[in-house]
Length: 281
Image (cartoon, rainbow, N blue to C red; front, side, top):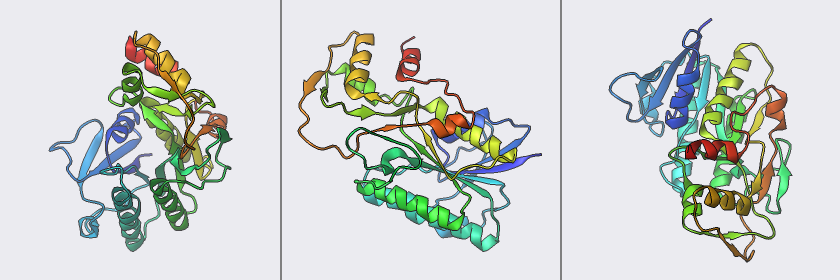
C-alpha cells in the first residue's frame, strides 16, 4: 500500500524525513514557496505560499497524511502568526473545501510550556506559555485539534546538530551561565526529529491508535551549566562564567519523553554527549 504524504513547509527536517521514508511505501510531496527546479531527496515538489489562499486553489488534496512543518521567517510575533495562524488556517480550509480528511501531523514546540522552576513536564502538564510566540503556537495546536480531533502534535525541544550550533558557539566564547539554581536545557538531535516523525507515521499506517500529543526530547534534560561546561572541555575552551540568577526565566523545565518511548521509539542520540560527541569526531 502506497501512502501519499504532503509535507507543508519542506525544509531541513522535512528533507531528512523524506530521505528515510521507504520509497516503496511512501510517495512524498514537499510544498515550498521556492522549490528546487527538480525533484530530489525522495520528494516531489509543489510550489505555493501557504499565506496566500489563491496559491492553494489548485492543490491536489488526495493525501493520506499531511505533516505541517513550517519555519517562521523571523522570531517576532508577526512572523509566527503568518505560519501558525494565517498559513495553517489556509491549508485547513483548502482541505475542508475539497472534503478530504487526511491524517494530520503537526510539529510544535516545548515552548508551549510556561513552567519556570525546573519542573518535569509531559503531555499531561499544563501548557500555558509565557511568551507571545509560545501562545501563538499553542493556539495553532488547538485550531488543528478542533479541525481534526485525531491530529497528532509533536512537541520538539531544542533541535541541534550540524548547522544548528548555538550551544557550541556559547561554549567557545566563555559565556556567562546561571549555575545555581540550575537552568535546564532540553534537546533533540535533528536526526531523531525526522526519526520520530517517521516512526509515528509508520505506526499510523499500521493501524496503531496514536495519542494527540507526543513530547519529543532526548533522555537527558540537563542544567545548561553542565552542558556548556562539557562542551567547553571537549573544545579545549575556557569554562563558562557563573552568573547569579537575577531574573525569572520565561521557561525552565525538564521534558519527559516516556509516552514516545513506551510506544517503542528509541533515540539514536539519547543524550547531548552522543549527539555533540559525534560532531567532534
